[in-house]
Image 1 (cartoon, helix red, strand yellow):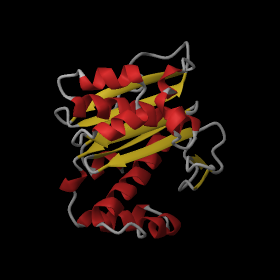
Image 2 (cartoon, one colour; image 1 turned 180 degrees about the horizontal axis):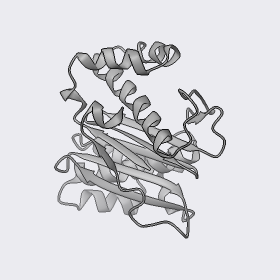
Image 3 (cartoon, one colour; image 1 turned 90 degrees about the vertical axis):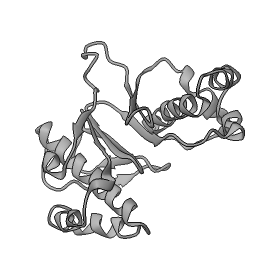
Image 4 (spheres, one colour; image 1 turned 45 degrees about the vertical axis):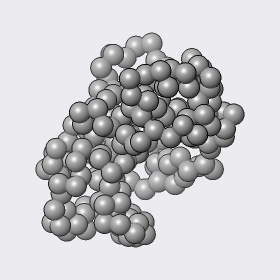
Length: 212
C-alpha cells in the first residue's frame, strides 16, 4: 500500500491546527525540531499518511510509535509483521505500508551534477545517464531506485555499495515519474511471486480530507 501526497505547499496555516489534533506529543516534538515550516509540514504529512495506511490495512492499534535501526531505518513498535517506510521532498510525501520489508524514496529533479553521478553510479549507469536526453531526470530516477534499495536493506550509503546496489535480484523495484516529470518515486520491496503488478501503484491524496 503506497500513499502519496503531492504539492504540500498548497496547505494553508490551518494544517498546523489539524496536526495538533491528530499527531501525538512525542511526534510533534520531533516535527518541531525542523527549522523550516515546509519541513515540519512534510514530516507531519508523513505521519498522517502512515496512520491512514495502518487503518486501511486494518491493523491500527492507536497512534503508532517507532524507533530507528543503526542507519536510521524506522520500524514500528507493537505492530509485529507490519513494515513501513517514509520519504519526502519539497514536492511531495510518500509512505508505504506492507507485510514485507520495503524502502521508498521520492526526489525532486535538480540540476545534474557530474561529480556526484561519477561517485554513485557504476560505469554502465554513468554512461546511460550521460547519454540520455536529460541527464538530470535520468540521474534522479536512478538515484531514487538506489536510495529505495538502500532503505529497504536499512544500510548506510557507502561508495562501493551504492554503485552496485541495483544488481541485486532479490527485490522488486518500481519507479514512477510524477508532477509532469519533475519528481521521481521508487519503491523496493521483498520479491514476491503472488502479488498484482499494480499493487504498489500510488494512492494519491490531494487534500488533508483524503488522509483523515
